[in-house]
Length: 181
Image (cartoon, rainbow, N blue to C red):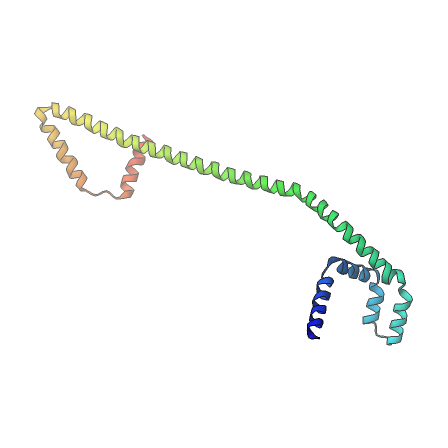
């Protein structure tokens, strides 16, 4: 007995969930909102409220209107969804285009920053290489003077300077001064 009742309630519940019943109910309330409002919220006797409801409703507003309206809404509902989906395609494409354009600009900016960084690194490397070449040339010239005594003094001075620790800020300042020459 209880199984039958449970099964009946489950079937009823699943049928009530279908959109046709909801739309029929919506159209019913839409067509009869004034009599329903009067029936539930007016401060008059129950007999007067029921009389008002009966006077202001007909078979058309109680049965045929909700059935036809619900059926029409069920039939045009998918078409409305198609029209809305079609109308949404343009803004969605525009939004995708804008996002792609924004991402492309970010990539280009990142590549430009990387290229600038590579250029600065190449300049710094060139400065260090020119310094080494100039030092080697000067050392060769010094070796030719006084039988190499001047070259030994230059090497000793360089070693003494190398022992003095420069801070990273001093090194950066030196590189920037060299780059701006």
